[in-house]
Image (cartoon, rainbow over the protein chains, first blue to last red):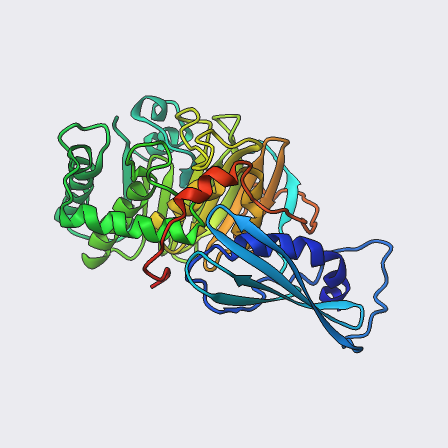
Length: 147
Length: 269
């Protein structure tokens, strides 16, 4: 239910993101929703939308988008007043390819504030350090402690 | 330039296996280092090893929509893939010798297999981008490769292949998944995308990401959030929110379109 409630406001964002994802070569054709978060709190919103949508099915095709590496077009399908499908059609680049993305495949990212913490760890991932910068890095301290 | 490498094996294996792993890393450095004038890369020598790496880099360029580009700086430099790829190779050598539980690191790239002790996952810290002595997050990892790209170490060495300028708005991107060379390339690509990176990482298959923005926000894909929740340290009190993200179209798309890549080989093959 939560997903359905989110589908409509997500429509525009999804279309924009799809334009980017369509450039990724070799993506398996079934872009099934990888992530569905069902516990996203939505204060003030009560689920009233039925689990199934009904009404006339309409399809609209968006403007042609030229990205640096391909030309694509986004096609959306509405069932009644709800967006039920977003597709991108790649018009050039690596050959004709259509990807269908379920409307609730929108990227859902967890957001929080950056903290500066310390914890017992085994290893550190960070941007490249040289031998000079390694000397006073966290990783160096860990390696020394381990001996 | 030297990059310190650490190999931590928690199983009884022969010392010669570790020697072979280091020998492999030295060979990679001698072959691919852009800092060595006599390396194959520097001399433009297309040995089979170089050709294989460049082929994979070309695949990764296609997979990333051109954002991972070994020629982004104007000269050939596959370091963004090779460092991780080298550790993948070293881990394979150790695994063949019987190592089931190991932790490798080189220049901020991390590769762990198995556990640090029975029942206990490896604890992988993610460097805080602004404070060298602090962590931004901790992951609990079993069989995981973790690569981070950012501007905080060697200065602004990652550039947007379109503009050839460093991205803005992002401090670091960490990508975790099965293959370190791929994670390295994805992290480089996502960092180059700037503020468009998080949306792109959300669509990756088999790889998770954590992006630290210049405004102090941290954006994690759900799988990354799970890896963090499983760790005991630094369990940030966070609010969960859906992130409406935007397109990563480049401002100077017109000029970049002239160098549209032809991607012959399917990715993820």
